[in-house]
Amino acid sequence: MKIVLLGVFLVFLNFEKNKEEDHALYISVIQIQQIAEKSPVQINIKVFTDDLQSALRNEFSDYSPVLEEILCQEKRVFISAYFSNHLTIQINEKNCHLTLMDCQKEGEVYWLKFEMENSEKWEKLKVKADFFMELFPTQSNIVNVAYGGEKRYARITKNDIFCETTF
Image (cartoon, rainbow, N blue to C red):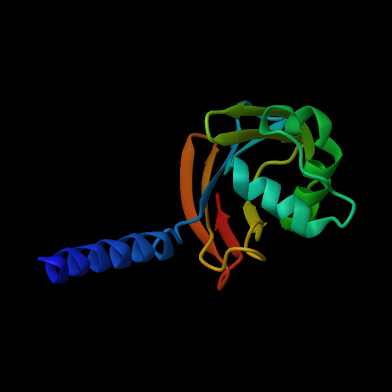
C-alpha cells in the first residue's frame, strides 16, 4: 500500500512539474486602426501585468517594481520608453511616432493606448513588435489592423519580428 501511495504521489509531483514547464504560452495583442481618414491612428496593446513588470525591470537598470494598480501612473515614462524601443510602425516607409495616451489595468492585463498622427493614405504598413521577446523566446504578438474598411491579421514571433501588408 505504501508503495502504491508513493507511486501516486510521484506521478502527481511529475504532473505538477510538467504543468509549470508547459506554461510557456506568452501572447500579446496589438490592435491598429484609423477610424476616419486623417484622424489619429489608434494602437491598443493588451499585455499581461507580470510580463510588463518583468520587461521593464529587465530593460531599465533604474526601474523599481511597484504595485500593479499604480504601475500606469507611477511608471508611465518607463512604459513609453520601453515600447519606443520595441514597437515600430511605418506607414509608406516612414516611421511614425507613438504617444502613450492611456494605460489601464483590467484584471490580469494592462491595456496600453497609443496614438500616432497620420495624414497619408496607407499604401504599405510595416510593424516591428519584438516586445517581451528578450525574456520569453516563445512570445507571440498578434497584430490586428483595421483601415479603410479592410482588416489584416499577422503573428509576430522572435524568428520573424516584422509584419508587412499593403492596402
